[in-house]
Length: 244
Image (cartoon, rainbow, N blue to C red):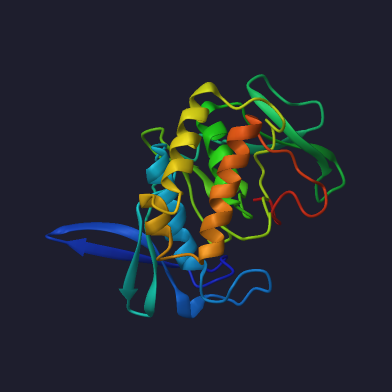
């Protein structure tokens, strides 16, 4: 995948006569970053999948750690998308349709006034909460996919689980609003699983540093106490660049 900043390989997998496609991200192809520990992005991809499973929201395609042809790395099931179902878009100023939420005003490459928007969709709202839990610093519009059965998926979670707060997303349309009623129960259950004796904490400890697991638990506890979607603190970037 030549547009990716790290080695991202479209691959085929087989097992017992069945075949599927996947995205393979070997550690050897990770570009060093100043704000994330080196050689850890693939493990964060797998950690995000484990949190998705624990939440019951099924937001991240199956993702595992494997020894591949270029060494160890993350392997994620490829999603065939329905490109007609856009969840994030840019529209002319004043053109926000019913069922969509504004994120911010901007100018396009030609200097025209536009608005970054996303759908007011309960599945997308769960994804925004999920991103707050894992502190996703890279929720681009292109990282939100809808498959041909209408299921919503999120991909590319390598820039997550930092000790410092780095939430960067195009899904700020609910900022400050009360969380959906069904979210509270899920967050309470996640907090319990992230306690030192919890299964999720144990599973994540094989992929993340102990301080990163503790910080994830603290973020979940904070969401439970607040009962609201997070708001940007404006002390740093609030959307990834580019946003798509």
